Image 1 (cartoon, helix red, strand yellow):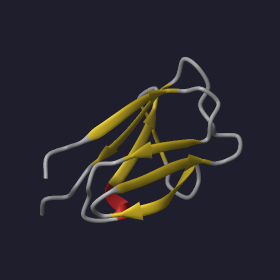
Image 2 (cartoon, helix red, strand yellow):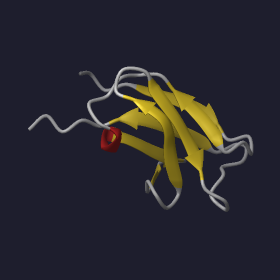
Image 3 (cartoon, one colour):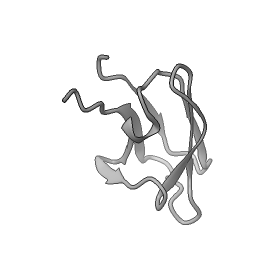
Image 4 (cartoon, helix red, strand yellow):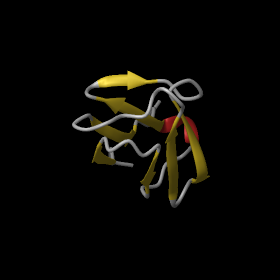
Length: 79
């Protein structure tokens, strides 16, 4: 699979959708203004499927506001 991503500008809303496929939920990564965020700490993934994506839901205190650049992407280990 090729690397796939979606970008948003922070707007104070906790939920951001992504619709690209992945092999496993752990392959989904998130950065805000280029800084990696940690699943289970900064965000959770809901409604996930390997074929249809899901939602990144930022946790309280970690919701990006404008003009933060949010990047949700797939990083699959090919080994």
